[in-house]
Each structure stands twice: as structure tokens, then as C-alpha cells.
Length: 386
Image 1 (cartoon, one colour):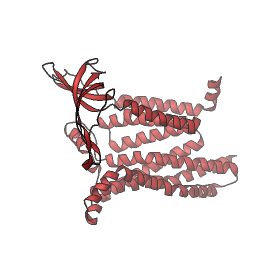
Image 2 (cartoon, one colour):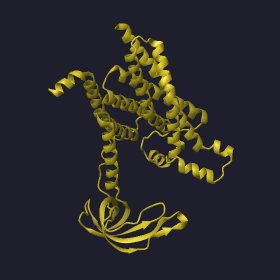
Image 3 (cartoon, rainbow, N blue to C red):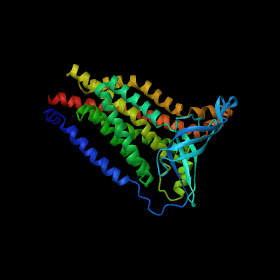
């Protein structure tokens, strides 16, 4: 009875989500990586989970010159928990430095690298502390906080987050690795994420449709401004930090488009903030219209702009700080080497941060008048028809 009532009240939402589920399934099939067939190499390495059973030797100590970071080596016995050597006890080394590894204690979990050689022998080395359980705890705290504070809306937002992550890791990334055009693919997946997330949060009603249209439009403007900016600054995704391994992949045959990665990152970064702004303006205007149904299109548009202006400062600041925060270590490094103003301003690092931060902010800013106009038009038409 409950399901029948829900379906009758949310028929459009159900149909849209069903269509999106079909699109998601098709996207997963098209983007699925091809199976690598062939004989197993005679020598190979595997990453497996293990548990530390005994510390045989330990000379690790704090290094004051490295701001208290650990340095040294441990020799230990571990019980392998996964893979073909599951149940076996191995003697492994754990190399620790300020920038890699951490000292382990008896009972700790570890991820180890087991190298198997052509003569059948194998050796293991500690790769890292096993962080699966701590990560699950952190994620569980986040989920509980979202549900306890947000209630049903918080649960819906988590479902939207799940759709976002699934779309990124099962469609976007595998699709790009198979040679899908970078910017069209990123934009299409972002539009899909916005549509599904807003439908889950608010259902398929005029309010959410207005927010969807505003989100897609704002994200498109972020992409366009990003393309113009990188053309003016003569920089593209090939200058993004850590792109070198991807360039090596492309040179060995992986058809990954690299030049569009800079603006692709702008689109993904802007998406969340644009969704927040457009949904806020659309919801606010629907409330304003409900309180005063006699308001015309101009009055509603003006109200939307007033509401949006209050959002511009905080949202723009949030985006800029997010990009600066992600590059905080790099900023400290550039400051420490005393670059001249000419050198710093002309560096690729600064140009990338400027493109990323400003293009995303442009998307947020321009989504305000677009959403206000779309919502005002929809509401004034509704009032006129009534």
C-alpha cells in the first residue's frame, strides 16, 4: 500500500531514475576495461593483507631534523591473510622514513608486497600500514553524522554521493582510459550526476528541474571559461602536476586524452558548488512565490538575484580556498625558494591554480542569474495559467 501510494506521488521521479539507471548500466558496459588475457609471467609481485605476529628487530627512532618523523628499519614476522600464500608466516622488512612508511606493532595489520620468482621462491616486504579498518571507522562516523543530523535528507544526500562516486569510478575514469574524449565525457557524466543527485534529493518537480537546468548551464560556463583561460595563458592538462605517469601511459598505447584534464578537473570541482547554489535559489524562489503568488517574473528574478548575491561571496571564497588548500604544500615550497614576482606569475603552477579557482567561481556566479531566470519564468507561467 505504501509503495503504491509512493509510486503514484512520485511517478515522474521513478521514471527518470529508471532511465538514469539504464544509462548508468550502459555506460558501465561501454567503459568496462578489456580483460587482459595471456600467460601469467614467471616473476610477479602481489599486494596482500597480513598481520604482524612478532617484532624481531627494531631500530626506528624519531628524527628531529625531519620534524619528528620516523626513520629506521624493522624486521618482523607476519601472517599472510589473503592471496595464494594465505596462512603462511613470512619474515619481512619494514623500511621507515619521514616521507614513507610507519613503525608497526605486534597485532597491527599491514599490506605487504610478495615477490614470486621463476624458481618458485618468494619474499615479502611491508608496503604500508593496513588502513582499511580505520578508513571504515572514519566513513562510518561520517555516515552516522549525516543521517543523525540530516535525517531523511541526509540519507538522500548519501545516496546521491554514492551515485557520484559510482559514476566517477565505473564510467568516467574507465571511459577516459579507453580513449573517450576528455571534456565531452567529463561534462556528460557531470550532467548525469547533477540530474540523478537532484532527483534523489527533491524528486522530479519544477523546483528540481529548474535547479538541474541551472546546474548544467553553470557547469557549461565553467568549462567554457576554463577553455578560454587556458588558451589565453597557453597552458593545458599536460602541465598539471603528476601528469607525467599518464603521459608515459599514453606513449605506451593507452589512448588517454591529457590536454583536457585541466578543464575537466574544473568541471568536476565546480559541480558540487553549482548544485548547491542552484538548488538554494530554486527552493527559495518557490517559497517566495508560495508566500506571495502575485509576484511577477521581474520581481521573482530580482528576488533570486538578491538571494544569489548573498551566496556569491561565501561560495567563491570556498572554491578559491579549496584549490589553495589542496596546493598548500606547493605554495609553501614556492615561497621558501624566494621566487621573483615575474617568475612566480609566469609559472605553470600559479596559472593552473588561477584557471581552476576562477573558472569554477565563474560557473557558480553565472549559474545564479540563469537559475533565477529559469525559476522565475516557470513560476510566473504557473501563476499566469492559474
